[in-house]
Length: 165
Image (cartoon, rainbow, N blue to C red; front, top):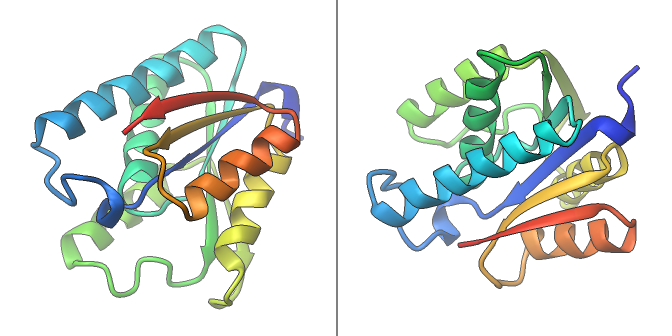
């Protein structure tokens, strides 16, 4: 059983809400990836050993890759919290392959809903927050799922590490 006290989850904007979109060569994107990796390393140093990622395109994928990179030389576990089967359907082929590779690299996979529903993303986000003591948020101030998850985590008393986008 995973201990909530040593678990961290992540929320962040999808590529479409990021100023650079899918251009990961953009300097702002490179800087965000570095800040995410630094936050992951910092919470690991504080005792976090289990990480949960919602696997959306954009910042979630950056978080997942940062945890995998840290796992290469540290003992930790990574969980993919998948909101519904076929989450990556409709993504560009290259992004689908990346998603599949990352999901298969996770130690655990939690499927929140079998099929898409109007609230499956929110249910996934609440699952992650309810299972964690720390939330890392890459947030730029826009309304939406990231803001809702951040506010829910604060109401639940999680330690929140906010990274500006």
